[in-house]
Image (cartoon, rainbow, N blue to C red; front, side, top):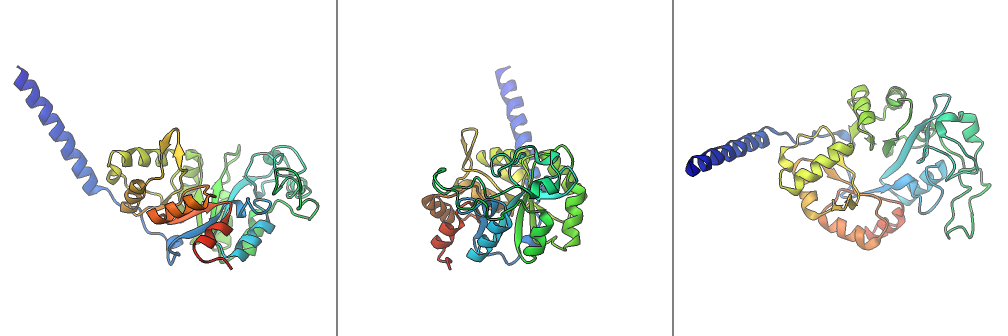
Length: 296
């Protein structure tokens, strides 16, 4: 009886192993996308335009980041009460401006009246050098007009109203389909955007990222057929070390780029460069450019 059970158990394991092998053989790597054509060996991605150097997600910050020579401008998307797409990290204006309220409940005119440099400080609140300098929250269209040749990473934030249709229409209007990569922590928002704008590159949404990380930990990343193009991940998540050399190898085996965030420590930057990351999202692009020998 015992031998019979062992034979059945062994046959079951063999069947599972066969299914996994066939699955891996049929799995496809991530598709190529023009967004990554002719990319630098490592892309310097300015988080919120370089929030460690100047007021985040403003025309001012993006202009300064571009002047430094970064490769990608990273930003976050919200929608106003009157349906204009604007760039700000939080759902409210409280943390970064002299105003208060939810972005989605304010009109563009009300948002434009705010001082977006009001709360930025280089010294923990001792000084506020950008107050009263005319720095405002920009619209997405303003950024598209100002940086027509730049790669951008645009994160779709969680909003009450969907932004997929107007967002996709604006990308197409400015013919930026090959210069933008979409990110989002919200799986449903990513799903609806991909359905609306399938030609645009995307990074993995939350559940996609979690699945790939866990599968890679047990050497089963080869089971994944990604419909996304990159993995933008933190160093750790829920106590699990995400960023490892093995994780990067597993991602590259599926033709996925790895772009960790938000990395501001020079030693950590050097470690990830040595491991072969494809880009680094940083609030201190000046430090990364210096490490790469690209500081102007």
